[in-house]
Length: 526
Image 1 (tube, rainbow, N blue to C red):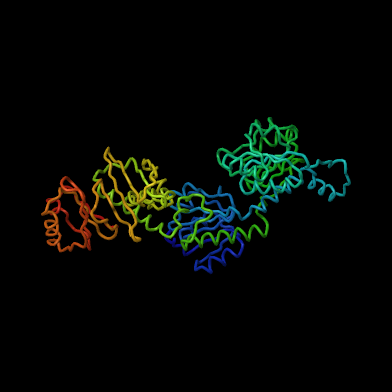
Image 2: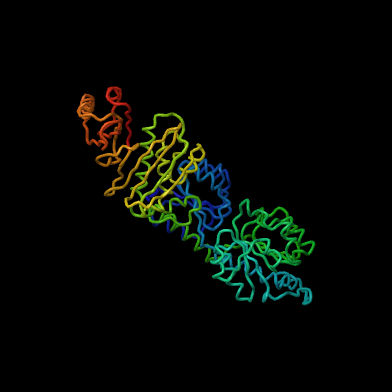
């Protein structure tokens, strides 16, 4: 992928000093302004190409829309629910997190809360500090032989499982993405939530906060659990319905809760936190020196790699970019954009495109349909698009304008890409490839060119019926306009209307004299 220009980055929260150091060592100017309020960020964000945050900064639609140059939002941590990812995507801004940075720290805190729930350690400590000696009040239970349900079997869920198994706990879990055979390899038996609820003695959640996980533990799910079940949340506030949890604690259906995260931080309602069977922390999951150093280092290195076109790690909204980091990807991206521009120019209808179909041909392009689709849409939408399409936002912008994107692949012996667009009942097609590092057009609307058309510079396409006089007539029109013909590509089929292409050093100011010789004529610069 071509390098991204990121010259100035704002760090709006306390991130490990190594983050700033790494960015500066790679030629990026860094400004640190901690504890910024929304108005400060709105006023300053327009001056920066990148923004690095933790969890306190709320990167809302207002802030993203106020950023005129922003290309990257880096979250030094895992969750990105403090970033409006949809708006960032539509603006073509990459949102990136550090998926591995705080894994161990969050897993260890989860295990600590499970252990403390079983033995009432925090409550016993506070009792001792009040000069009380009450051994009977804090009778606990062993973890050995108990069942721990892990909802969300990603990196953190896996680390929790392996640690709690060492206490002799049985680990079961639920995850709609992780294959059961994968979780089974590290000792977690997967099952449906309906099967899981009645079996568990402890529940810990490790999912992102989204509509499908909001209130995942609620009155109905607590009612299906064993009486006295204990729950832990070190993921995101809101996954456990806090009102339902308080009701379950008061009824005894829930025997205790370990909470590191809350729906509002800091909380405004304290009844849940003050319940005697609740132990809580002020969102400390990633608050270790090791995690902060790892997250700061990871986000800085990921940004540097993206800027230098080396690799793309941790992106949450631009997965299509991941396959563009191979040596020849930029030539294929250029091909896709150029073919989109050619088809747009050749389509005279003012109606919007309704369908774009991308077909990749050849084994090497099997995983390239994603970025080739985006590239073709960039070529089709470049003019008249407010945000300016790029590989991040091209497909969402196409969807907004009513364009359906279809992709397919053919195991052809030749490497090529076919783009077909439908508009107002008509279909326009182009077939292209990359030859010797140069994007070339092989066919246009079933017209096969004798010589591939290099897709660079000023190109003049016209459709006409082949005749011996055609080339000399076109040459004469160009000469009269003071324009020399640099190259000429004719189609192979004799007779009938065919497309031709002429390479010229500069665009013609007037096509009217040429149109007297041909049926359609368009020009573009690629």
